[in-house]
Length: 285
Image 1: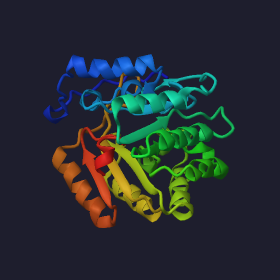
Image 2: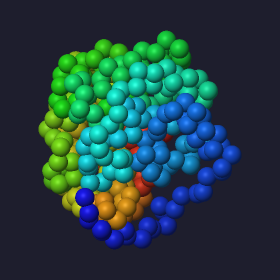
Image 3: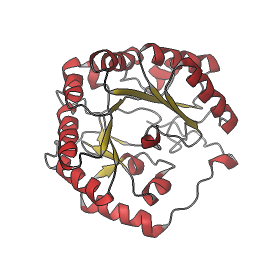
Image 4: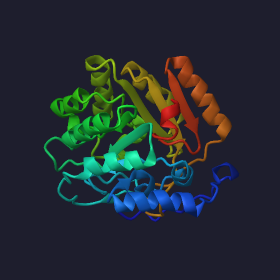
């Protein structure tokens, strides 16, 4: 993929403080010693410094190589390695060392696996519950290519929250997520809501990719109709010149307005802001 799109200069409200090397270095060393990946590092999250300094991270399971090549994402695309059977135990160890009371587990998309990686998610959830019963577990899952049996494997493990991000509006879905499906993603959230009502449903999306205001409103309406209870809205930041360009930097006041609109629509918790990402302050939602 070669777009070579210029990167718009960031406005003042997107300035991020430099990390304190002693705290971020400690978390980085722990993750490295446990041979674990985080979406914080792989996706170049702007909140990495803040989260690492507070001793938290969003674990990225099933490798650091994705079978899909979404045009906004910085995670490496290609042929992933075999599933690492020891990965769940190492996550349990890292959660203990970090003294986490809220753990978020996500993954690359593994279309090469029959179950899309559902069994690995379930294994992580169950081991964390056994080793750290006071720790709440949220999972941010791919669409499993619409496989209901795979989704049921995750639901049966009973995480507190199942998050599945829409990422972009329907109008941009085909261009930016050609291997995904807008309707399939909504259906996943609907199935969780209907078949596992005790599990909180959550989703998130980015703005600034060229969507219209009506596209945003329609996406929020569709999510509520699917039973989604929690929502995150953040600013898209172009990782490199070879990724989809930023069309607009939304002002914090615009995010505040979107948050109020979403709450009025019935979402029980909404995080919206320029630096908000799907797992940002997840424990506070």
